[in-house]
Image (tube, rainbow, N blue to C red; front, side, top):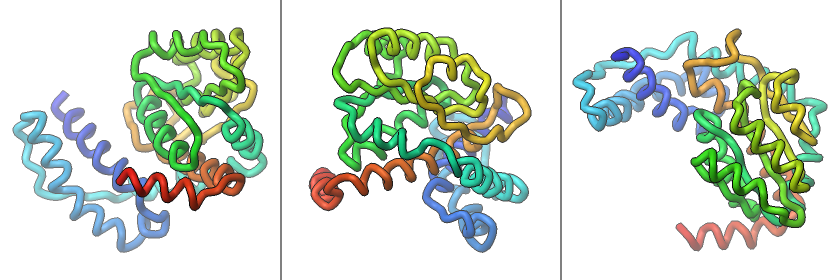
Length: 238
């Protein structure tokens, strides 16, 4: 349990920082800068948890190379996948409901932020029951975008089943093409299996591929819209 507290704190900090770094930096000098910058941030997280741990240094070696390889594998896998179809569906939606629990809920939050910045109306509830209730809405051009690494999260699978019954378009992002969630999807995007076990302890390896997908979708949607006007409105909120 004590080691898990430190691991979670490190994952929280590294996920946030790695998402903003170019891949090349992760493999070169940026890794050293990241190790130095991560120390006080990880310590701050541990202090808020009253853990009693003192972080003296962070060493990131093969883990960083694995993260970079993860992104490279994601880029390779995305070739030929229906990204344009997903972008068209999101661009034409009256409302996009996001689904995800656990680590995938964090991905859903990132998706809400990214899509809102290109003018896509989104909503995300952290409560699985509320997510299910939202699927009952028979809104015109309702699109549901679900994230599930394993593809076996029962609440998400059930919510998609209800959404399909209500006439919504369903899009799924998962690592397992033969999982239960795929049977409830109109469109599927697949991310790499970065761990031999379906149910992982880590968080970063699940988030990075989704960040790449969201960036690509934002670019595709933005090319169809008046991005400058949207950007001005976003900047007005800052």
